[in-house]
Length: 141
Image (cartoon, rainbow, N blue to C red):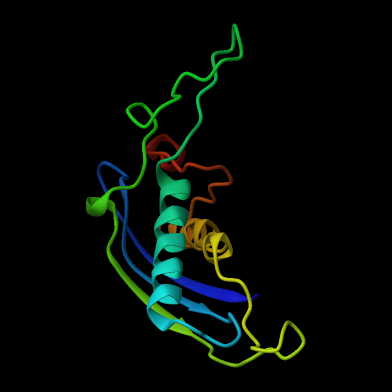
């Protein structure tokens, strides 16, 4: 399922903090059976992609191999303050090869292009190509 994400970022000049004020996501998910549910799935995928690109990191204890942040108290996720406007559009065209209804699946695949789009937007804003996630302030210095 092809999807296209267009991400606007703002990088604060002094602190190099990355903000995402706007995302446009266009998804080809076949026939849209439930527009409200489909839009919610895509919004959730966009938020998850922003979180993966800028916040989420699993920390492992190098001595014993255990997780250092094994609960939500220590695992940093994107929150409402990290999320700007999200515009969602669907290409509502049935795919008769998939099934009789023409609907494709729409779940976690909605987040796939977001992190790359954030990385490209950061590159265009700063000239620095970051090739790991999460993107940190120190990566932009």
